[in-house]
Image 1 (cartoon, rainbow, N blue to C red):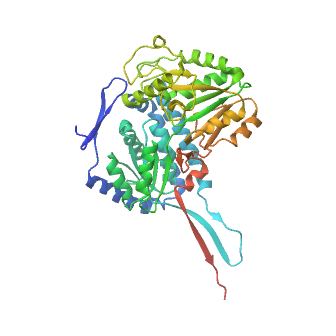
Image 2 (tube, rainbow, N blue to C red):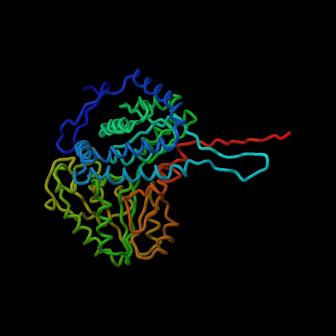
Image 3 (cartoon, rainbow, N blue to C red):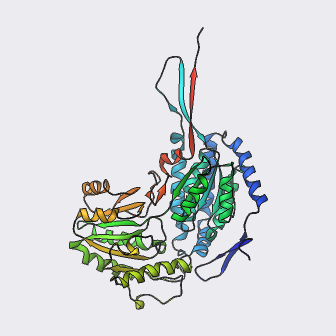
Length: 465
């Protein structure tokens, strides 16, 4: 099928065709935009409690179908079946229900101080239509961050999913139809990159929420910058972990290994570089490598598999190139060919490297793969310097039993989220945001609603005769 007409979803697990879809025509795009514009006029006036009930019923439908939709997700992007349903039952549900619960407070009017003869307050009004551009790596988790609060705030939503997980957009449509969402309030489109730019240029679109690459972020920013609309960009990271000598050892090793390799390392906030206090460095590397070797690389539809394929062959090739460059520059690999089965790309065995430094791409540029470099550090100052030596600033974590140390170092670390004894997690009660090449904007928490509404001031003066 020519790419100008449509696309195929190719499973990374066995190279089978999961589905074929066509790109929207110009007429279809205009119909969706017009429908969104018309639906928004009524939707913004629907009482908040009714919007909340509809969103709750939609999430109930998600959870009821988690097993089937999780298997479909495994076929589309390769995450092991033992984990995929939990993207829906776990994080997607948690975030949606949290945003629903906080909506009445987050969206309430902001009164000004009392003043005789006046009523004054600020109301948060819907922007209009929100375009959500969602990625393949966590297609439900990332998109729910915007879709649910956007609808709660009275916006209409148009979702464009990455081609690799395009069926997720159709599942959203199904859930909202079952929930009783009025027609046109939520819609989806399958689009080319050029069509995305055309949609952003349309006056119907009032906000763009994008999760993806830095290059994609620049393209979205350029398109949105031609109009006076806002954008939220979540562009990934090169997230560090700092392991202190006083860390809870077994817990730390287990969780840091998981933070590196879960989803084959294809997580925006995966741990991508590790710094360890010198006195425990050798022990950490030994235990980290030992646990890594217990992963089972194989068919993602096999419930025993804990490490599936990467999403595409070229993604795996990019990671291999980083590893090979690091080895040429003196790094030592700790995973040998016999440690994992020899499977064709995009299956990629994990790799742990020591003898690494910041002249290597492996320690500076995003890998998005099951590979990791580990460095010893002499003291906190070196750890802070290295953690901040990155063009990204999404999350960072410290592993210690000393909260004062965690706070002190966290205040000097340039990231949107700072973890102590945790990683690779989005707390829906906290703002999800990044700095530097990790993008800008904010989702989740009460602050997430601020980017999906505009303030309108009401200034009423009462005249008395």
